[in-house]
Length: 182
Image (cartoon, rainbow, N blue to C red; front, side, top):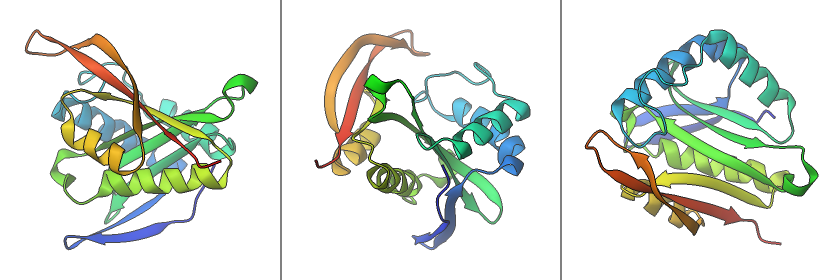
């Protein structure tokens, strides 16, 4: 699905949040690879599960046409600096929910880009009758957990020893969800 563009100015930085379009595919492939290498908060190491330009073109097309999906990008002066996705399903028993994911280039942390991507996704979900938004977060990503809780997400469970990080230790994944008011 597509949303209207929204402009933000946070701490002197102006950016736009908008729906992803086909011409974003090349930049998204590059940005995703860079973000995966900047933090261990993501599910992948840099280069794993690589999505090339045609892969992103397919995702963008599918998400744009689906009423259960939303693919947003954060743009600063024509440069994509982050993105988020809500992915739903048409399986009847799960049609009330979507899974949310977000990532932002490290140099743009602290400008509320993740927060604004989330708020736009929440508004879209509520406007489209989606009752539950789920996400997974690494237990060590305390700032993300605080943000999610602030935006109404609650802990649903913990996947114990779910991820093996570069320090050789296993870490838990926290499963969170936000429920719409009925």
